[in-house]
Length: 173
Image (cartoon, rainbow, N blue to C red; front, side, top):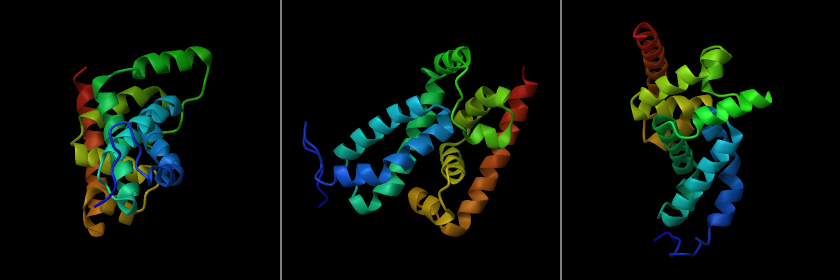
């Protein structure tokens, strides 16, 4: 049985997993949130959850990537901190970390894209975020328990659903 963190304790494999996976977890969250600071907050939550989990270290990469995407999407859906961060960053003239929105639309539409991403079915949104975060089809498939052949279809459907959501939302305002 995999070692899990004891109450107040740390898993014996946490340090190695953290050192190996932290950059990817932050990158996935930053793709969704557009903010390295917020992404680091998400990474902290994700690694705390991993410490409490029974996920084997060998399966950590996929689990952590999905957890980062889910946690970041939850942050978007709840609307916490996002608007305040962007206003602060804009006021200071600070650049925002490149994210999925940069691949799809202009800088001015980032908030709209993030909101639409937050309205997509969870599996589609996570597949889209993971693939656009640089994970291979095989890595996305393993992380989401999909066949590698279905990842491309899932990502294309997610991209199509995102476009439809953006169109639908734009026409309703």
